[in-house]
Length: 101
Image (cartoon, rainbow, N blue to C red; front, top):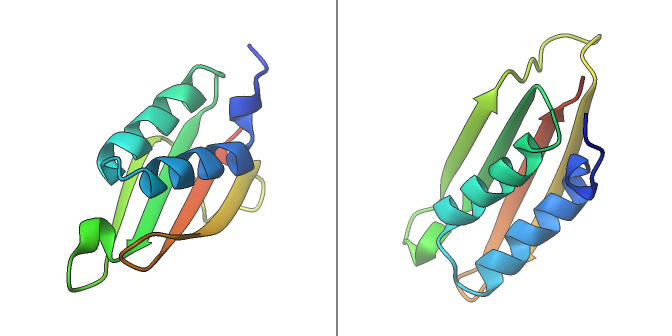
């Protein structure tokens, strides 16, 4: 089990926010953050972005999940972070869940 900074959702959410401010595709930013997290031997990861994604007229919610993320159980050790980022199109909300061993 490799310990890394990428086990902390705060760092990964700020990474995604920086990518979105630089106008990188939201899908690509989410995939890269999931790949970085999977290198740290976690059981599951979920990322959600909501708002005017890519400047569309109507706000929507996009999410990706890899592995297991049991949000209904209290026993599961889940690390969570939510973050607001200002882009030129408006405010986006990013949520990040990590299911730890």
